Image (cartoon, rainbow, N blue to C red):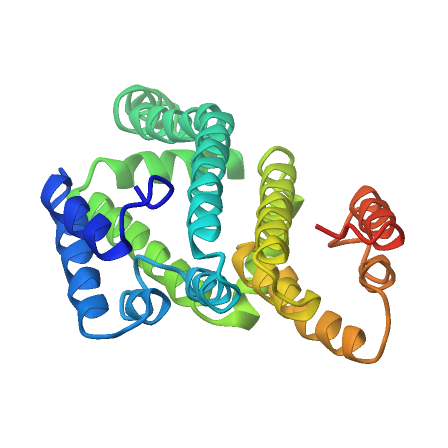
Length: 275
């Protein structure tokens, strides 16, 4: 609508009336009211951080300051489409191994609950000492036949999930957890290159919006979803202020920034086409 010449305020009103999602309709209406009260679009979106990430605010603000708001909105739509496609591919790549792990877990519980009890009775009839591993399996089999085992199992799973959420909210623990995920055979490369792709997309968009390289790099690192890149952003920003090139700063951390990315950034710097 904005590309077609429809005023931004009217575009938001149309979205509020036509949106099938109730939350989208509500937020569009609230944004329209804020604009009518004299707020800028970037300032209005800042009131909904769970919907609009911080990178949205900075990009919209840059578009407002440079008079390229319509172009920035259009590029944000492209970014969302790329994000959606990437998330869909990541889920498709991880769905099979996750399904196998869950199926293996429940099949193992089923074996301990149905099949192994018969073997336990069989071994008990011999009245002889069993090997340590066999004795442990028989003990677990007896536990599986009690309701307390299932109660403890469910509580343990809930506790592990809550512990993971708590640790993920703390930067130091999140770094350790993400490094562990990067070591996984299949999920590691997917997480690494998806975060790098998000970094490059946001940097391209911020550069086209007219941002300086320092702010563009900072936003790109924050939007990457990789805590290792986020922490490294302060070092990169400090190096840029000291006159170092972005490619040289990336080369100092090859574990985070692959060699191909460094070379492409170096080519962009030499040709004045970093974006």
